Each structure stands twice: as structure tokens, then as C-alpha cells.
Image 1 (tube, helix red, strand yellow):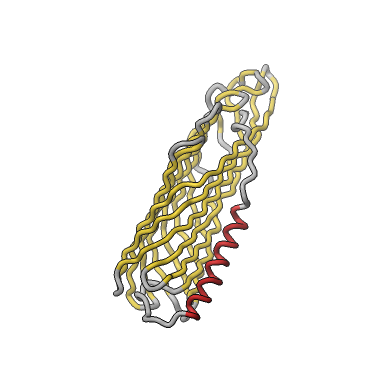
Image 2: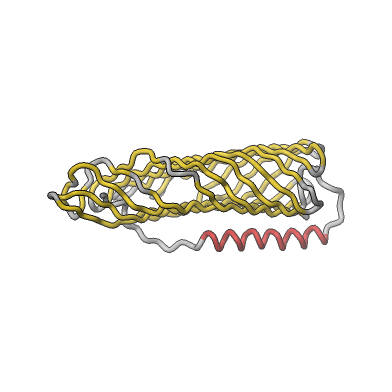
Length: 282
């Protein structure tokens, strides 16, 4: 198989712990703010405080290429089976037109591509094809300041902030070397912060039935790792209860990262599919 990726072990903060803490902090701060603020109601498209917990049913397409200590590894585009990705969102309205927003999800699934390229194991070239048995983890957390324009049933927003992403690929490559099966293990791990831009539109048919469309872009230049992450989705919100509702949307995320070092590595991931959430608002 192939030596999967460049071996770089880093110790970033645990993103899933940060996600829960971030959402809880926004929620507690928002409840306190809402309770202490007596002012006119904002647009019916917006909530003083909201927390959404749900999942993204994604159809992934993945492509990986890396220079490893065993040689160049290239995995053609792979289309693993549809997978469910947990996701959490939170938003805190400050005044009537400004907000802080948080969004986090994690992709953590097995990845078993057929490898191509000048694959070597223990310094020996692999004859024929090699396969990989790997685990791909990708964490993405976004925090932004949003400015919402409008006060009626339609609002338009723009957001500026920062994103944190953490990508890890660990696996074992297996192939035939000199007529015998050989294996090798390697790993890639990188994380970085990057600037974030968001745009959005929200419409309220009634205070309890709304729709929205949003898009975001993350661009990282310079340093060891660079690339971009783009995403967008469109959905509806329905609140059968005053403070509890349901959200459904359809979205796409496109991730392209390149590590520029002694051993280059490329990661291309596209995730498309529907999402569903339970949303609590105050």
C-alpha cells in the first residue's frame, strides 16, 4: 500500500471540546443579555439567542496526494458511502442588527482508496496497485461578527471572523514488494487559523416559519498550509412551539488545502447533502 502521508504530529486544542464550550458560552451570555435588555423587538427573521444541534447527511468526494518518507502517494477521487456529520450552531444578537455567530462540525470516517504514483514501501517499489486503510478527520470551527441590514420580513447580512481547521490522515498502506505483501504506516496532521467572510439572507413568512440562504468563504495564504474552504446552504425553519423548532436545509462544502514543506501534501474534499437540526431560541 502506500505510506499515507507526511508524519507530522501536532497537539492542537481538541476542537470538539472547544465547540461545546463555545456554544455554551454564547448561550449563557445570550440568555443574560436577553434578560437584561428591554428594547424593541428585532426583525422577525432574527432571534435574540439561538442554538441549533443536528447533523449533516453528507455525500463525500475525497482526493488526497502527499509526498511521504516512502515516496509520492496519490489517491484518485474517492466517493465513500453517505455519512452523518454532527454539527452545532449558535447565534447571539447584540442590539437589533449585530450578532456573534458560531458554527462547528467534524468529519471523522474511514478512507480506503487505491493508491497510484511512485509508491514505495520500506524503500522498495510496489508492483501493481496498493491500497490504503486510513482514517480521515477534519474539524472546522467558525466564529464571526455579523451585521444584519433590514428590520422587516427580509434581512441581509454580512459577517467577518475567523475559522479554525484541523485535518488529520492516519493509515496503513499495503502492497506487493518483491513478490511479498508489505505494509507501512504514516500520518499527516495540520491545523491553522484563517480569515472568514460570510453573506446571508433571511425571510420570515411568519414569526414561526422562515427561510434562509447563506454562503461563506475561508482563504488562507502564506505559511506552511494554504488553500480555501467554501460553503453554502439554503433551508427552512419551523417553530411549532414558541422556543423550540426544526430546521432543514441543503448545503455544500468544498475544501482544498495544500501543505508547502519538504513533503508537500494536498487534500480535496467536497461534501454535499441535507441537514436537519433542533433549534432552541430565546
